Image 1 (cartoon, rainbow, N blue to C red):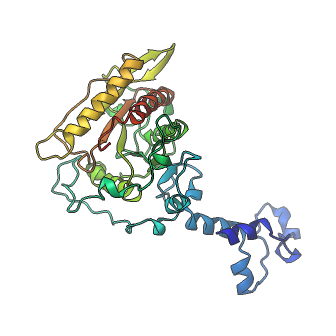
Image 2: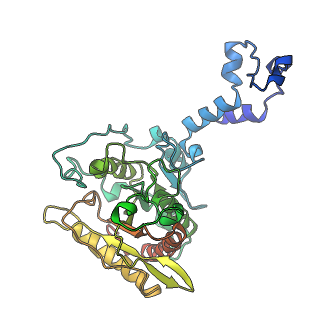
Image 3: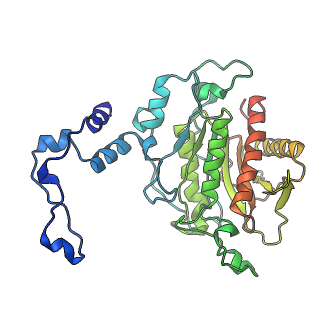
Length: 365
């Protein structure tokens, strides 16, 4: 990687043979490609063109691929938003950028679905447990009140089962009069801002407050709405596998209820209200811990800004929350909120979450 960067910095000006060809035909309005000169294999290998060099760097260091629209189809890179300059060891940073250096790293599993599962359901418990907490981070804990938590290692993971969920502000010409209209407030290709962009804002805010976060901006709708949770389960497991120090795993959504009173005014500005959803079922592990943590998070938000939360829902569903004590589902406003209102909400959410993390009030502490 260092050699490639050096080559980019020390590139010589191109020879005349590589300049665009200018001929009399150029005036006819058609575009012309540059003339290409033959070069030796070793020259091509050790002095790659800029597009090739960029691609080489992004392949070698996935963190460099965090550019462009969030919805790029080939963007399957977990984004580690590191807080620095914490005392984390250098190899930790390299393991975040180079997956094959991570201890116990496994190849990404192919996406499979089970048609027998009901819509919105995820598969059952994993056949094997995740690494125990004792093996997650053999580094000394930071001093009380330190700016960077957990030695800068990831504490929060964020992903999106329903990545297409957007807000009405992205559709200024859409008049919503029915539930069918409400369903049109979505961006399947992410050409408009979605809940995924809200997740990115939350991850950056957590980083600014001293908490390293992992954000997965992946799509989970390729096989249809019915299989979204089965698809996102692979992403949730990947976050836990590649960032085993994560203690809070958040599946970020926005509500689709048309009749929901989803806005509160704080300091003279409208803010989307936040709701927690926890699957409660006798055969689900961790649900008591998940519910207790979620209730505490909502209480913390209410203490600072009364009315910012909605009552917690506890349906008979899994929502991938059996993967970790501290796995929760949060809904940021509904489809009739604006993107800016949702953005304000996650700032208040981040403040409350970091306060709990600093106090050690999270499952598995």
